[in-house]
Amino acid sequence: MTRSYAQDPGRIADLARAIRDGSLTASGLLDRCLARIDAAEPAVQAWREVARDAARAEAAALDAEAKAGRFRGPLHGIPVGIKDIIDVRGMTTLANSRSRQGVPPATADAEIVAVLRLAGAVILGKLHTTEFAFFDPSPARNPHDPEHTPGGSSSGSAAAVAAGMVPLALGTQTVASVNRPAAYCGVAAFKPSTQSMPTHGIVPLAPAFDTVGLYGATVADAATLFEAVCPAHLRRPGGAVPERLRIVRLEDPALAGCDPEIMMALGAAAERLAAAGQEVRSASAPDSFAALFETQLMLAKYEAARIHRPLQDAPEGSVGPKFREMLATGLAIPDAHYRDGRALFAAARERFWTAFADTDLLLFPAAPATAPAGLASTGDPSYISPWTGLGGPIVTLPAGRHSNGLPIGILLCGAPGSDRRFAQAARRVAEICGEG
Image (cartoon, rainbow, N blue to C red; front, side):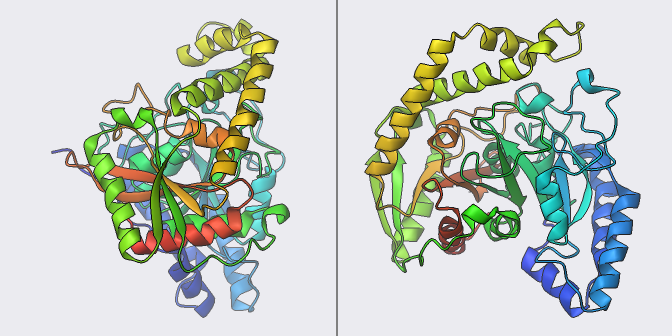
């Protein structure tokens, strides 16, 4: 039987409380993370670079501030890993591409990393990504079974949290790149409303969809990270979450291909919520998810191919085969086809959120199957991509194990702009369902 390297990194609320009351130091927590990296990284391969010296210096400075009674923010002393398409000052951003070998270190943090530092986080290093956050895989492996993919593109981010190497991590989602790795690796993730997070200092893929996402071992941890870094326009109060949440279990023909055990896990979550007094009903999607997936992927390829067009002429071997194929496919998409796709999605969003205007959140499987064996494929994004295009926040909720031993994840989805209120609702759902 393949050895599991999964381990719980601890609850953020507990770690933050211990740092504030002096029973734990930032340096002590960092040493704990570094020891776990030394133990698990040879098998999991989540990290592109661990910034040991810089992280130790940051932790020491934060300890001095804490001793003086000064705390920068809610993440004071908490280590965070950064997906390697996001700039961290003094470190190179390679995006897992040979085409970027030799680029100089970043001279400034990406905006989201600067916000993390303001909140008191310790930046622990760079985590592996698929090439340019597309489909050519990274070296990272699934901690629950290293012979299986952790998903993509935020492969290292999900794997590092799942292996207990860091309690929090940043990823990005353009198609399904935050929520799918979380589901495959048995951790939680919070993808805020599409395009709502700052992207300055992040290598782009498709700007119409590129969104920073947040990883934690639990929904509460991922939501805490979101609340610590969310921009001002998402901080406005969204109204109190009702005692009786209005929850829709969304139905769509695409679910006919879903693994029965995953559907059972989704059904069990719905039953638990109903038994706890929440209002749960089933309803059909106004538009075909299969059609939305095809359109969303086309739009992403169109934009990515034009952003990275110079790489079409790069020497052989500079980029991976899937990325090179995407360049050819994306550049062949006519402008009119792209405009039609944008119009189609705008109309679909209007229909969808009008139909579910009185809904607090929707339930859906994260993927048709658990993490595939091998590392050649990062898995099936078709269940998540339509939600990314529909624009609202998405949480991955760990929902137990398949009989094959791998994690199952389900999606909690909300309306665009409802992020703060949705985070509270997602926390309650996770408490009722008992994550994991």
